[in-house]
Length: 452
Image (cartoon, rainbow, N blue to C red; front, side, top):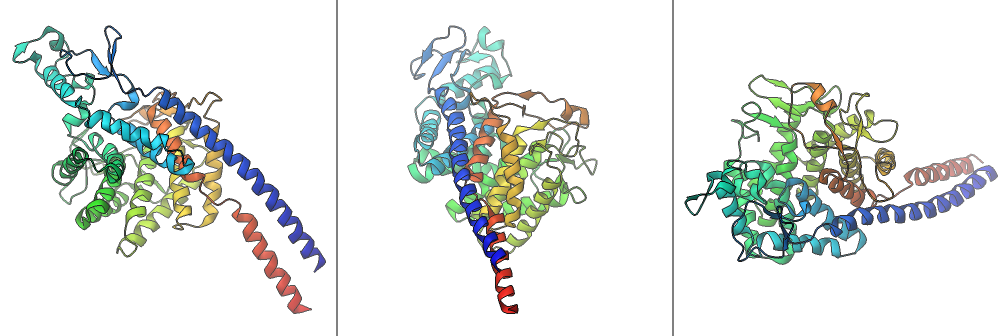
């Protein structure tokens, strides 16, 4: 009896000390997130730069059409990874109660869509396509003919892939819910129409791509579609869109999930009726983030909710089995000779943490996120530079392609996902093991008393 009381007392003291240490650690972790985000803010000026002269402009109004004029900051380009970054900034404001991050996102969409600048770049894209300005040949634009990716915001005008609208559209919905700008709603509806009616699909409705082979299913596309679809469905009470988002997750699980390893393949070639060769880390990251984003908005009584959660847990079990000794996950999840990669590690932390915080999986999975977070912190320097970020990747039939993808520093893919991971991991209620042990010892004490 006395021994049990002593153990309980020691356990309580240990819990208090550990909890205090945990609070201090949390504060340091928040500082890291702020350091990364503030560094981005310092390099996110809302302006345009002439790439030839270096001159900067706050507005393009009155400027002659030039192929050399681009948005100054890469963080303000219309790219899917910046859509992820925008959502991460919004979530960071929620975590820290510092509104400057969310306000920056609001300012960014105003700068891109609502400031009168976009028309200039639409003309720029058309001139690059044709090599002409106002119907007359232009030597300047002819040199770039067809290379529309040289223009800022070109993906808004292309709108041929989910990459062009899904991630940015999801963040735009969050901004629209507060700002209510009609121009934002116009783009949101346009993106919804594209996803619903124009995006490439298999005969059964599964989202696919026409490259590299016709009707290739890319796991990346779950993130490029589902978070937007779920938000749009919630915004407009569109049950058909919500059901479509659920359908995509279920179909991708059937097509791409490797039951033996508990991991997703990067792609499926419909023509060949076979999956690709790689359990690519980031591809699995896109899947888990898309899944938890949908579950957050999916009605509790949806008939497929339990199946989605069961699929999520299978995936998390597979990820836990493939976590490296450093806590990070690898570029190729099942290949121990591939490098530990930042974006997939961050996305797994986010997905697992969100699943724990919402009670979708057992709290014991907290340790998987915890070791992942500790590993992730080793990828960040004292100057808040983030390393080992795999550059954007296509699919490839060779594993060597994935092995040899360059690992970059401060690429937007990594900055966005690290911030995203932190906003959810730092909400986890720590030290479940102490609480559980305390309950166990109390039961033991009661049992011992009954014996006496």
